[in-house]
Length: 360
Image 1: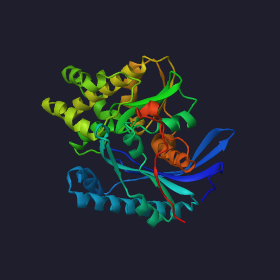
Image 2: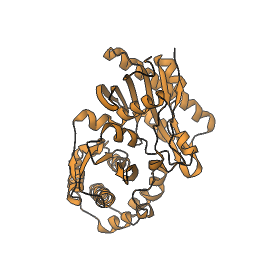
Image 3: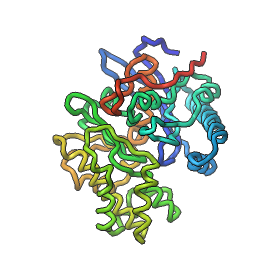
Image 4: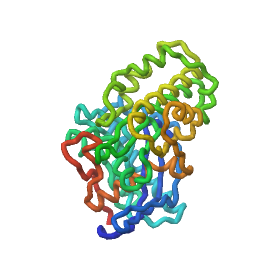
């Protein structure tokens, strides 16, 4: 493995989002020159989940303890095998693996967050050292355990005023009062994809379905009145699947609307909440990544609600920025440097999170 004082790191980052789009694998190179970090996504791909794995991951929150722990180990072996295949396929020489895992429970108010994918199982299968379980320490320190990406935004993407991710949820990171702030804004693909699933589609390609829909002002108003959105920006706050199940779906289901109308209305809701969160800040450049960046209709809705400049980068960065940054969090962990900011999560202190499984 690379010496801990080395200025070059070759790392495989793994990311699985709440929207179950698939497993993102990114082989990344990080170079530290004159205290400035540079990155390159050398090779990356998304591995779609089989229907079996999708169903297993979806049902874990209601399974028994033994089956849950078995799934944690099985998913770790699954991740390790995917990494091994990826290494062979692309003739890669990696220093270690940095894995986010797949979030099943996220209840920071109960000091609880669980991302399955046992690091020991990953390491045994791909025969590399592994960093995993990045969120637990921050939650134990009183933090939200999320979002963790902002330290990467700060050190890798300083050229942008805002870094906006449109994944299962939308989250943003930027400098505020000389420190990094970040928070979850609202659900995005976790809801949009669920609506599409009702009519047998995995997602709304380019937002074409939403574009043809009619806006429901009644539903839109109810969505915008949810109490989470009344919390101030610039304070640590995060969303999880449980919040969506409790607050979003009951509202969608009480209106007898066509799926296109639901998509149209929810896109407008997303745009309003993002603009509400960012328009209080000075005009600047927004780097937009995540699967939602491909939703042209959603991007247009956001543009119509803000004066900030939206910048949608190349395909590789759109799709693999989170995997890239979790690889980077692993680098910081291996260097024993801060990779989780209390200004973002609300924890009692900055920390260096992640469990390390050394494979010699």
